[in-house]
Image 1 (spheres, rainbow over the protein chains, first blue to last red):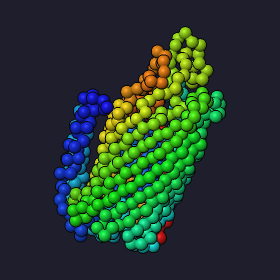
Image 2: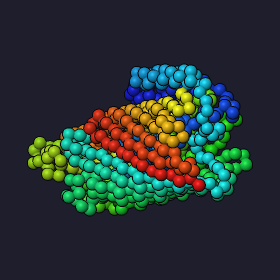
Image 3: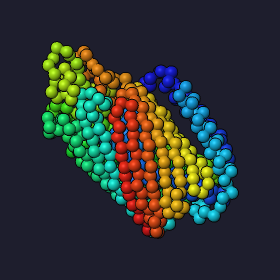
Image 4: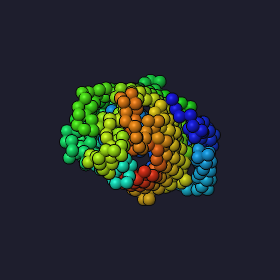
Length: 80
Length: 405
């Protein structure tokens, strides 16, 4: 199973704190007419399928971990 | 301690950005669409769609003194990719991708020693992916895909399903996805010995949440769970057992006195990754993003990623810049060793010297330029450079064009 080092434990216990902290900073219902700023080009969350595809392949092939880029985390590639 | 600092910096950064946004929120006049381009599957007007092409380039080198001391590796990948997406109706769309990887000289020494060896001497990859998505009357979007890829020693078939549910008056959506990869590979060892073929199965389940936090902030959060089993080693990887009584080994880059043995790793692996990104608008031309990921698996690899980004519309409506920095750190796998001195009695003794399963830190700096052309067409160039603490630096770049219709 996972390494039971104190560092690992802190990493995984810290995730809910990080997410909770982010979610509670100014989260409220946003009316449809208030979302104009979210449509600015600099606010587009999607990097684009082509870039994500290449970025995922490069990063996954060079690191021991996978996940969080695209929707998959392993499989489908001999990856160099 | 590390995460505490990271959390603190994250919240401070968000607070500062929020303050800056509040100060500049009176700026107006931008012509962007009211409905934001959210993450996850979307649908549009029937007959609309896009075609995109991209050329990617990736270079990595494991030179003398870097990474695995017994190898002198150099890797170059050139990847053209074609993607398309087309709205068959207002509620149904199809999409797909076709990619080709030209991989050269993964191991230049082994190329000359064992020309028939697997990925150590070069590779060509072809991958195809086709998908369909449909919006139900309930506003759920259901999607499915099928894919396949072929390398000279590797074949993969994959299936995927996903469902996106809108939540909370459009403030949020959640996407559930499941993907399965069924891979077959030829086991060709570091010394050219062929051991037949073997299988690898990867099952991946993911949940991704999109949330609008405020009129100037939104983000995504997700968790991916992956179960892999079968042949999970890299067939051509070797482990060197040192013995000072042996003569220098000419097959080893540093002429070490030792013998090469096959890499042996567990036949199953469970991976868990949790990630998030939050983007905050400063004004119509600028935005900050903070992203991060935590990862752990049953091989003992744990990692932390922190990725802040800055977006700038240098010429509004014409040119956007993206700057990103990525910090990555990982622990080594339980079976990783830099040196082995006692020979192995069999494959049940797990071992690897793959540098990517060792402990290291990495710092990546990247920029991307996106030009907005006529008819919503775009052209982009991106380049990233990574410095690793074990010396295995690499860089990658891509450029692409998207035609919308």
